[in-house]
Length: 290
Image 1 (cartoon, helix red, strand yellow):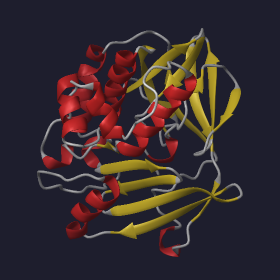
Image 2 (spheres, helix red, strand yellow; image 1 turned 180 degrees about the vertical axis):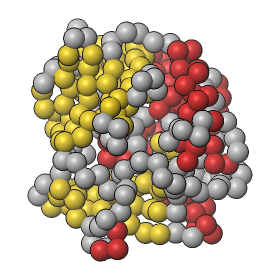
Image 3 (cartoon, helix red, strand yellow; image 1 turned 180 degrees about the horizontal axis):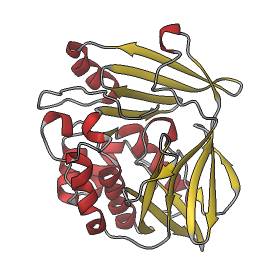
Image 4 (cartoon, one colour; image 1 turned 120 degrees about the vertical axis):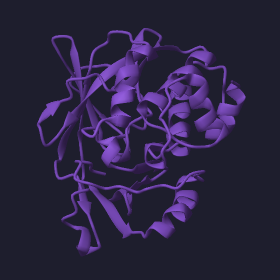
């Protein structure tokens, strides 16, 4: 694996030597603007592999995306290769309908230490829940970013990531009641501890998420890519674009319904993805908001 190939994949041409917050932020933003968060392999009859070589081949060489266990594993490799002090952590994702966090550790995120300060770095959360900058590990502090205001809080050794969202405007009235729209202004995202993890800790959940009928991912095909002013999401046959801060404290959310023949073209034009196998788009009854 070649770090220069990774830099080329994310379009990064800046400093490789300064191990500071500016460089860390720059790497994170280049990755989320270049590498989609997606589960399309599942709906093309292929596995979501966890090994670093397989991830590098999928994401860098074949210019695909992946889910958190893949894209954050790749980011961990890139950061540690550069010399950053990074640690894998495991999180439990919040389920809004059940009003609770997952019982299983199903989310991979990173902690990076810079000059004695700790930051949460995560390139693996879809749609408008994705951070654009590292979050300093301080409890109770509002940390405004382009997508929203993020907040970390700590209770008895467990950390919680939440966000405070803007209002949203949907010009197409046909979609104002879409189940894809997040209705809560204050949104819980995930919980985690600071216990160091290895990629082997995620092997069983990686298998479960892509095979179990109860998994969100087996019933839902999606692809999400951040842009410098918003985020594109493809869920089943529904394509959306959220423009952050369309006007004061309001996001613009646009919807478009595709037919199956248009899927491949939009994946290529918007997400820079060319699939080798036929995609079977799905948008069942699983809870997923953009």
